[in-house]
Length: 226
Ligand code: ATP
Image 1 (cartoon, helix red, strand yellow):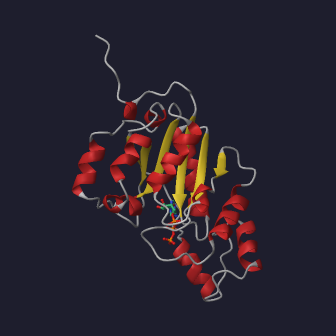
Image 2 (spheres, helix red, strand yellow; image 1 turned 90 degrees about the vertical axis):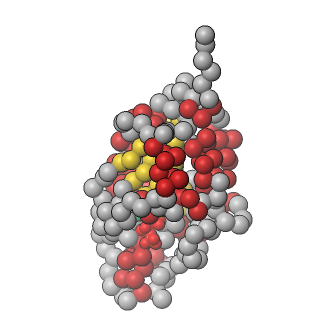
Image 3 (cartoon, rainbow, N blue to C red; image 1 turned 180 degrees about the vertical axis):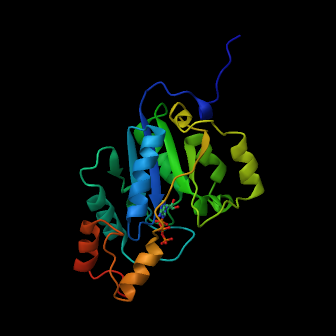
């Protein structure tokens, strides 16, 4: 008897794989950038897209405008092989729900491309509050990025849900179009955008915490001075 696989765990046959790394990127910093490279290498994806959130649903208004945050991401990864910027959330008004973004990405990529959404443990601990969170897994794989300063404390329902979807290796995600889950422990640079904004507000240097081109953009536009 031939068993039908469910679309959620369909094995990709397009050979193409895309991962998205969303965030406020207010501003993008070397912690994000170094992790982006390591995530791309661990998954073995063709492209990793950095996707700035237009209106993050679970946090306050960002310090820089969306188009400025997007411009900084663009500048930071310019010329880096395999890293791309995806500005699609800026085209939608209202809260930037990841589930809507993934639906939109599926329209662009089709159903046979392996799609993985990356989230840090800070985001994962709040997953049960995300809009239609279970549907994320029928649209994409989920890669959880451990962050030392945010120990895992996910909701029980989320924990049980992902346990059933866990794959044993990061590369196992790219073999699936959607529905897989993997936890990646990376050595991360202890840099945060909050700290960068605080340094700027108190007139301190942010050199070497962000690429020079991002520091120049911030200075030119007078961002985060209060
Ligand atoms: P803020 O301090 O404003 O909360 P942040 O520095 O945590 O910002 P975000 O834009 O909120 O940055 O993060 C986007 C994504 O990058 C999230 O998944 C987050 O977990 C991850 N991230 C943030 N900082 C780092 C870091 N230093 N190393 C690796 N990943 C990071």
